[in-house]
Length: 458
Ligand code: ARG
Image (cartoon, rainbow, N blue to C red):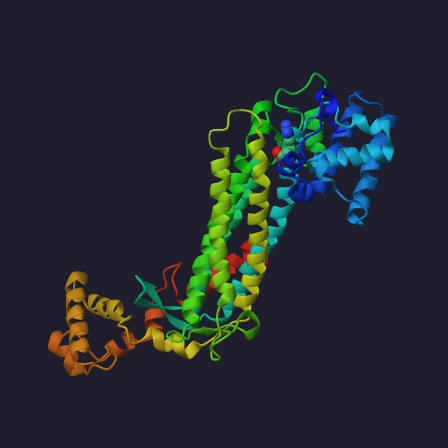
C-alpha cells in the first residue's frame, strides 16, 4: 500500500511505477531531505504541533536512517516513487507509528523545493572551489609568463603582440564573472520554500522564520504558490553553468589550435592526450575537445528546463520532476570538466620560441610603426596610410618591417630615423602598452597583484 493509497481502489500499473518514479535520480537528495525533515519536526515541536517526545523519536530515527544510508544498509524502492516517500516509509518502519507524524503541515511540493535548494547550495560551494583552483593555476602561469611574447588575433588573423600572461588572464576575468553569477543565483535561491505546503500553506501555526534560521536561509518565500511552482533558481544556475562552459569551450578551442602542427605553441602532457588507433604519429587533444563538446550538453540542460517550465500553470505540476535529471547532469558535467581542464592546463608545456616567432612576421608591429610616426608629429590617419604602403611594399618584396633598410623607410617618409627599429621590436610593442588592462609587464604585474588579493592570496 502506498503512503497516499487511501483513496485508491487499485494498485498502480507496474509501468506507471517505473514511469512516474524519480528515486533513480533523486536518491542523491537523501541527506538534504533528512536535514530538512529534522528542521521541520524541530519546529513542529516548538510550536506544540507535535510533542517533544515524538519529535525526539522522529529526529533520532532520521539520524539513524542517515547513518544506515551512508553505510550502505538501505535499498530504496521504486514503489515508493521518490526520495521523500522512500525516507518517510523507512522512518515509519524504523520508529513505528510516531513516524507518521513527520509529514504534518508539509507537502512533497514544498519538501522537494526545499531539498533541491539545500542540495544545490552545497554543490555550488564545491563548484566554486573548482573554479578558484583553476583561477589559481591561471594566475601562477601568468606570473611565470609575463615575458612570453605571443601573437594576438582578431578574425584569427595576427593582430598585435601580447604575452601569454595577458592572454591567460583574460580567462581569469571571465571566471571571476562566472563565480559572481553563481554566487548571485545562490542569493536568490536561498529563500525558504518550506511551509508553503502543497501550494496554500497550512492551518497549523508553523514558524517558517525559525526553520529558515535553522537551515541557514536568508529569508522565506513570501508567496506559497510561488514557493512550490518556480524553478527559476535552477534555470539561473544552468544559465551560469552554460556561460562558464562557453568560456571553457573557447579556452579549449584555443588549446586545440595551439597544439596543432601549424601553431605548435603548446604541447599537452601525455597524461592528458590520446593516440589514434590507426595513425601512429598522432597525439590528440581529446580532453580539450570533450570539454568543448560537453558545453553543448550543458546548454541542452538549460534549454530543456526552460522548455519544461514554459507555460506550466501554477502551481506544482509533475512536469517539474524533470528539473532534477537535467540539473544533476549539468552539475556532474561541470564538476567533471573543471578539474580535468585545470590539470590539463597546469601540465601543458609552453613553447616560448614558437610563440615569439609567431608574434613576428605577420606585421603585428604595424600599429606601432604608425604610432612611431605619430609620436614624431604626423597625424594618425596619415601615418596609417604610410605604414599601409610600407606593408604592401614588404609583401611585394618579401620583406618584414624589421628587415627594411632605413633607405626603404625614408623613401616613403623622411620622418623615419634609425630609432624605428627599436620602436617596432616585439618587446617594445608589448611593454609600451602600459595602459592598465594591457600586456606591458608593469601593468600585468599590477593586475596580477590585484587578483591575488581577490583570491585572498595576500
Ligand atoms: N518527485 C517529485 C518531484 O520531484 C516530488 C514532488 C511530488 N509532488 C507531487 N504532488 N506529486 O517533483
